[in-house]
Structure formats: C-alpha cells, structure tokens
Length: 383
Image 1 (tube, rainbow, N blue to C red):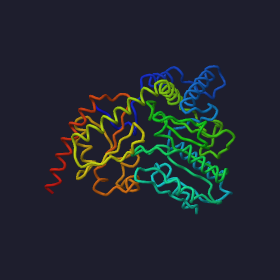
Image 2: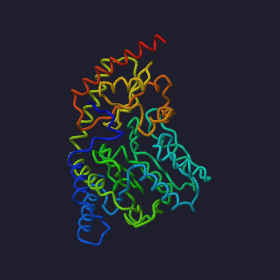
Image 3: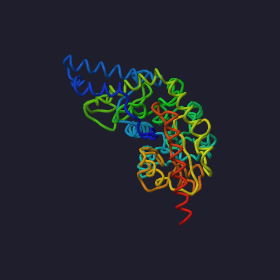
Image 4: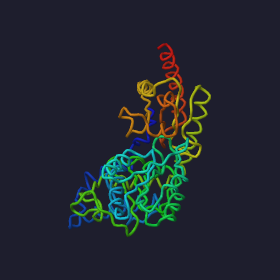
C-alpha cells in the first residue's frame, strides 16, 4: 500500500497507539475523580498538555483539549463572536477556508452579521491590501487559515496579526492551524493570535482529539456546558486515550521535526521532477513556498475521481481535494478562487506525504500515474 492522503489522516504512530491502548486498558479512571487513581490520570493529561503546548511554543495553561480541528474552530468562532458582538457585526475571512469555518459563518450571516470574504492570489495567498481595506470600526473578528488544506499555501499569520492589531487592538483573530502544526514551524509566542486550532490525527496521533490555543486572560463562552472540564471551555469527560496518544505524537513530532520536514521537502521536489519528466499537460497549483507535505497537481483532459479509483485498485491512495470537501458534489472553492479553469479543476489531485513514504514509493506511484492518465485521456479523446 502507498498512502498519499496524509492531509486527511495520518497513520497513528506506535508510541501514540501504545499510549491510547494503555489509557483504555490500564489508565481507565475518570480524571475528575477525587481518588488517587483519578489524580494519576489527571497528571498524565497534564503531561500530554505540556507536550502539545511545546509543539507550538505555547504555555500549557493556554491549551484546551477537544475532539479535533472542527470542534476547535467552532468553539473559537462562536466564543470570539459572542465576546466581541457589542463592538460590531462584521467578520473577515477568506474565500478558501475549511468547511468548519465557512459553515459556521453562514450561520452568523443568517443572524445578520456581515461576512467579508477576502480574495486570494493565483497561489492562494490572502491579499493583504484587501484585508487592510476591509478593516473598519465594525470589524470584530478575523479568521484565517495558516496553511491551506488543498494546495498547501502558507499565510503569513504573524504579519497579518500585526496589521490587524495595529489597525484596532480590539479585533479578535483566530488561526486555523490544522494543516500547519507539525508541518511548518509554529511559534504562538510570536504570532499575536487570540485562538488557534489544531488536530491529533494530522500528526500521527489518534482521531477524535484536538486542541485549541486560547490567549491568556481571554474569556470565551463555551459551546458545551456541563462538568466544567478544560477550565469550563469544553465540558465532558476527557477523551483520555485520545489525549494521551495526542501528547505522545506531539512529543515525538517535536523531537523529529527537522528530520521529517527535510524528508517531506525532498519527497516533494523529487515528485515534481518525476511528474515533469513523465507526464505532459499539467499544472502545479501549490506555490514554491507552500507546505512541503502538500502538492496539488492538475492534469488536462482527465477526471480526477476516475484517476483516484484507478489508483486505488493498486492500493495507491490520493485525494481529489480536501477530505471535507471531496465527499460532496460541489467544486472546490479553493480551485475556483485561484482562477483554475474547469478542465484543469476536473483533473486536480492532492498528494500528501508523510514520514512513512519513500522515494521508491514515489517511483511506483509515477509509473501507475502515467499509465492511468494516458488511459483516461485516450478514453476521453474517444468520447
């Protein structure tokens, strides 16, 4: 099997899986219990929180566990909007955000909030000059992706936060870091964000666990009210297996970040070279300075979903877009926003590497990719 859909989910690493299994079979006490067994589990969660915090250079007290990036984004947006609603009713985002951001903001549009969708350039970067023009006295929130989940474009959140806060320090800022954490350097002590979301299963941790960074002193209205866990921001008995697995994955990722980053960068460069040597009529959508883990390619005169099914017959797995948009029938908003024509958009695939992918894997992939693209083009030419 050659698994190239690592933006959707990564294989849980052995250390994280072991921690999760031990939590289910040995460390099964409720961390809210008053007895020593429960207290011991609470201490293990605290160590996991420290490991997750260190991965993004934050204080552990500012990290709140939840079920993943979607919930973290929802907690952040709902809380920040409610926090700042007396200031105004205008929200700024981009046209290529994750569904958990865009769908939440549709809800607020129905509540008579004005949502401004910033345009992006041909590589998916938010247009800074448009952001500056959009900010006014009624702006209460700016929410932007750190790394785009389809083409890997990196937004300079440090610069963006500086511009926004210099215009109006009372505007709150959320960063969606789900495709950034572990994949590019993230330093939340340098980036002046109010909240930042990320997820376990993107960094070889178990599914069902994620984290929200919240700036110290910022009080947000929770989505879930109950037992007061996670300092009242996310009530409910903690997902101990997920959290402890997440903590282990974060610890190891931090230790091996440079090695894994270099491997992903070299794989991406190699893949681009091999595609260029073997296949004609294609376009690279990911900019040169994009995440090393994500490569978006568009091939003329093919249908990406057909290519995907051809490849899976050989146990090679890719995606046509993000996992959260490819299940539907609508076209990718990201590909539309960067101005990709319909023919290329229909032939767009996303390749996401990992620590487990080798150069030999890519050689096999290229052979099969060329074979099936040629077959599909011949069939479509016959139509």
